Amino acid sequence: MEPHILDPAVLSWPSSIPLTYTTRSLKVLKGTKLTLNLPLLLVRAGKRSSESSQKGLQRQPKKDLSRILRTEAAITGIERKVNSKKYNTLWPKPVLEALDEAIRENRYESALKIFGLLRKQHWYEPRCQTYTKLLMMLGKCKQPEQASLLFEVMLSEGLQPTLDVYTALVSAYGYSGQLDKAFCTVEDMKSVSDCKPDVYTYSILIKCCTKLGRFDLIERIFSEMSYLGIECSTVTYNTIIDGYGKAEMFELMESSLTAMIGSGTCLPDIFTLNSFIWAYGNSGKIEKMEKWYDEFQLMGIRPDIKTFNILIRSYGKACNYEKMVSVMEFMKKRFYSATVVTFNIVIEMFGRVGNIEKMEEFFLKMKHQGVKPNSITYCSLVSAYSKAGYLKKVDSILRQIENSNVILDTPFFNCVLSAYGQAGDVKIMGELFLDMKERKCKPDKITFATMIQAYNDQGMTEAAQNLKVNMITTKDQSGTRLIGC
Image 1 (spheres, rainbow, N blue to C red):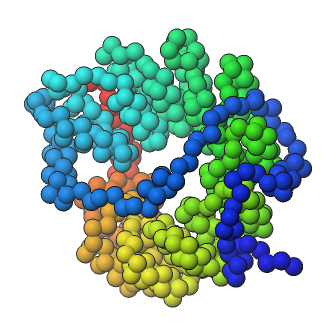
Image 2 (tube, rainbow, N blue to C red; image 1 turned 45 degrees about the horizontal axis):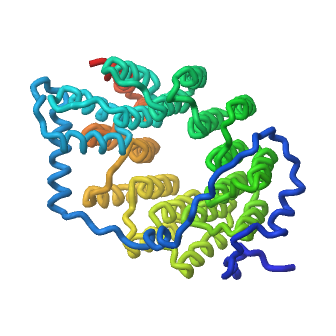
């Protein structure tokens, strides 16, 4: 029996990979029955120049530290001024930078408040690009009501919605689960001469449907695209393949790949590869994952760092730690640098099974290689220590974090609160809850549930009741209307 390409001893890929699809690589696909009635698609194959790959290996020049500090100070200053009515003559640069920063970090409340401040400036000119960015952000944050209000504000300013604005609005409704409104928006687009929905609009709509498990609507979308003469793109196929894969609808996933290759113009790429191996690896079908890893290499598609991270996670979930470590060794030989995501996966996998020694070994290796741990790293460590009953080590983690500039988030605090809750230490839980608010980490349902459970276990029913009231108040405040000024 031949050794498999993903065997620890021979993990590799051919030194010379064909640029065209081989006969063998297509044989696997011929046996798959095509079940989708997809329109013929015509796309231009994107050129992959060697220059782009070389640029990826170069480090970007570091920004001047003093300029970074000045920028951050200016952004902080702008965020402090959003609640004041007297600032209408601010310099454009800090306001726009603060808005971009808030949008990039998906802090929708800050972004909308800064946008309100922006609109009060004497130099302000409404732009569709700004509204597009804000609408996309609101979709990611699942804020459809705010998106609808923002769209109304844009119309009140006399702007004519562009194709990008409408598509962003479709995504805001779709990602928030309001598919009816998303489809209605697409219908509205058809009546506007310069805003007819395009392949990108429909790809967004398909992605929303797959995320919500509404695969029954996919055929309707493809039929509509075909009727309008809109041809699918590689992105469209990758979206549907990824959706089917995550829903473990493997036959339809492979059928979509067959249709993609059968078109002759829409070629699979690294996104297709990663969707396939994630789908099979996540469901524990390791042999199928390895088979498709081989097939995509024969198609000339090389793995990237995300591919290796998927392999590592898949082997870890299957408790095949030998192959998990061998992938990291292979990465090192091929000069792929392990990222914080790579180390986080390995740390999480060893932590889950209580292998504290191996977990700590990779945590030290992570720091020795200059990879900075983040809140996810510390969350995995805390979870493992808590499960193993090493509460003193949780204390040690908190001390490490105090001496670092790691940005903590709500999931991390939830993890630590759970650890101390299981130990019955409600005093430290109270201190952490206050620290959480000081760091502007909003408590969520998990936070309150963990705290309430711990207080009830200790017989502190009054404190638990107070937290329930606090939770209701927080929920009510989160629904505050932020737009409409």
